[in-house]
Structure formats: C-alpha cells, structure tokens
Amino acid sequence: MKNAAAIFIEDINNRIKEYQRDHQLQTTVKTMLNDMIRVKYPYNFFWLGRPIIQLPTDLIAFQEIIWDVKPDLIIETGIAHGGSLMFSASMVAILESCGEIENGHVLGIDIDIRKHNKEAIQSHPLHNKITMFEGSSVSADVIEKVNKFCKNKKKILVFLDSNHTHEHVLAELRVFAPLVSIGSYCIVADTLIEDIEQNLIIDKPWRKGNSPKSAVKEYLKENSDFIIDKYYETKILITGSSDGYLKRVK
Image (tube, rainbow, N blue to C red; front, side):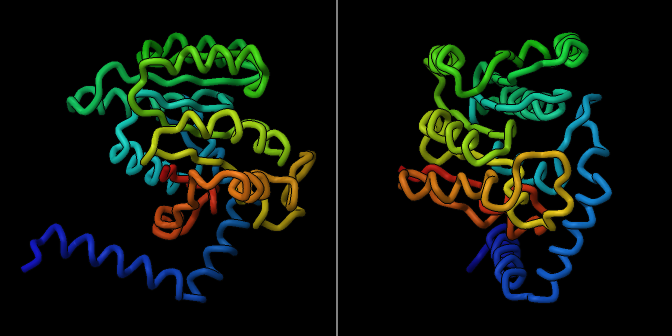
C-alpha cells in the first residue's frame, strides 16, 4: 500500500502530465509570458536585498534542483546586480546548515562587474560564500582560473546567464557543461528569447535563431552527456528557461 508521501508525489506527477495536454492552459501561459516580458515583470524582485532578474517560478525550480543535487559549488555566468549570486549563496548556506554539504561556494563570472554592484555584493552578509571573476566567461585566462577553482569540489551545478547570443552561449556550454557533475544540471537562462514575440526584443543582438535555445539545440547534437529535463519547466508553467534545464546523465 502506498504511503501518503508517495500518493502526494504521484498526484503532482499526474497533474504535470495533464498540463502538457491542456491546450487552453498552454495558450494562456504563452500569452502571459509575452505580457510579462512586455511589462518587464522579471525586473521587479529582490533576493536578500539584491535585485534578481528572474521569474519567481524559475527560482522555485532552482531551489528544488539545488536541494536534490546538493552541489558544493555553483558557477554562474552573468552577475548583474548580484541577486542570483545571493540566491545561490543562500542555498549553499542552507545546505551547509542542514549538514548536507561542507564548504559550499558560489563562483560568479562577468565581463563587466559594475563598481557599485561589486561593493554591494562584497558588503553583503553572504559575501564569504561568493567569489567573483571579472572577464569574458569564455576567455582562456578565465577558463584556466575556473578549472583551478573547481578542483576538489564534489558536485558542481552551472547557471549560464550572460551574453545571450547563439555563438556565446554555445561557447559557454562547451566550456562549462563538462564541469557539471553527473546527476547535476547546467541551466541555460533566457531560452525564452526563441519563443516570445520578437518585437519585444529591443536593442539586443539576440533573437529567434540567435539565442540560448538555438545554442542548446546545437550543443546537444554534439554532446550526448546531457538531456533536456522537461519536468521542472512543465511543472512551473512560466519559465525563462524552456528547454534550458539540462541534466547530465553520463
């Protein structure tokens, strides 16, 4: 006989399967996502005092993944205001406090870390969980520093959220995806660029066919170590990372 926890999870999984078949729901989600981008909804939020440019639904998925994977190193490309770094730092701090990992850390990489953002991050109570490298995420010197930083880490998870052009994201995937531990994830942000109304993309080089999602598709053709995990994006409905939750399976 199934226990209550097993029944609860089964109910969740059955609902998620129905979401995929619910055409009215999927149409509503697509419309809502376009409207959210139109009104710059993802720019409204903070994490522990720092602006975090993410959809709240994705943050729920991120914390589920982090709790399940239990990484002792999270690597992020793209720092902006530092909210995502704070999110990851708070998660590794929680994992530590629960006795799930030891010495968890977050590595953030950005080609241009603005002075006021750097100072705010360095003065934050979680600053000791964060290291920042300034430079292109795909430059030889940064790659060398990252590889050295990863030594002796037991489990690594990666977020890619910097330059969103096809060429750059593909280069990042080739550099950072191999660092991901088996069973962990490389999460590619803003794959939604491929799906939203293109007139919403203003003064940016990326768009349909030149996006993180197009880079993911090309990368998966040359690398069979990863699969697209549709579970989280289907469950949360509203996501900036459609087809961007990449799970390493071998």
